[in-house]
Amino acid sequence: MTFKLIDAHHHLADLSRSYPWLEQTGPYPYHGDDSPIRHSYLLEDYLSDVNGLTLLGSVHIENGAADPRAETAWIDTLATEAGIPSVQVSKVDLLSPDASAQLEYHASFPSVRGIRHILNWHENPRYTHTSSNTIMSDPRWVRNFARLAPLGLSFDLQVFPSQLAEAAALAASHPETTIILDHAGMPIGRDAASIHAWREGMRTMAAQPNVVVKISALGTNDHHWTVNSLRPFILDTLEIFGPERSMFGSNFPVDSLYSTYAQLIEAYDQITSVLSEDERQAFFARTAARTYRIPGEWDLSD
Image (cartoon, rainbow, N blue to C red; front, top):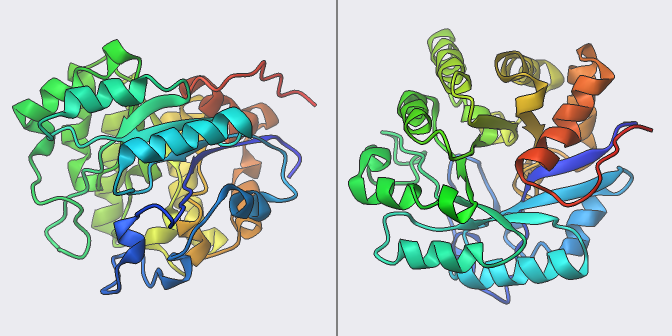
């Protein structure tokens, strides 16, 4: 791959701290048997996976730490001392009684760009992350969500296709807040009706100018993916949002369950070869640099 890369979605973990989801033992969630990644995944491990690529920067996404404040402080130190991750998205449960104070705490760190509160709800308990499918309309949640923009924070939105219409309404009612749709809207169904519903939901989201999308974690719903199985979801998302509103994310180490980093990049490189070089550079770096305000001059020309 000749173009430069900003990985807009990856995780680190230090099990000398506490990460409850990495410390449990079965049953495994929908991303499959994750026992191979239930260990520390430090910066040197991530850089080893990325080895050989021109990595300009990266965005660390909260990783389910028991103490999100401590995780933010740790990642901020890495950003200052190592430059990778470049910036981060922290965790706040926007329904928590002290959510406002938590937001102010995380926003005080120079590397913090946004917040994630995972909202995936599904009638199948194996898929759901929450106990309610009405969180985005809960008045307490909405009040705290409205605090993001004044604090200079974006929101990483992780939902399933059935939730995209409600998410689009949220975006429309808060046009001042940048919303990053994680994992291409998480298309979990592969039947024709499910794919149609996903596409319609993605178009509804793309109609909101304050929404951008990350094409990432497709392996979580396609454990034995091939270039051909990934292609329609990558190209459809790029067509719907455009390269200037789309960005690449590896979702490592979770997606290391399904491929190496090099295999993942090779697939994306092959699939996006139909784009112009400028469009590919937008997708692989420029959109992430702009959206997450990653420091640097960002002259991406060779």
